[in-house]
Image (tube, rainbow, N blue to C red):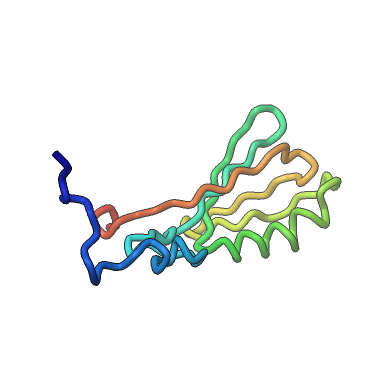
Length: 112
């Protein structure tokens, strides 16, 4: 006894017509966009600092214009802290051992 439960009927779409079968990528309608990016700095001596950037482009601009050109320098550079008013951080680029960039997703329920 065979079941026709999952069998295609005449007029149903066939697998070759689906975007995945033709090589096209389909974006989910539930795709999330990060609200900000947390940048974790691992500093010589075991210190860890976290700063946040609104967009990945802001981080890339700071990284390529401030940190990379002075990577071997022991002179202080400013690290932007945009979400804390009146506070700033400086560090020595030669003492940065690692950087981790983490997208932060916040729903409308979590915002305040």
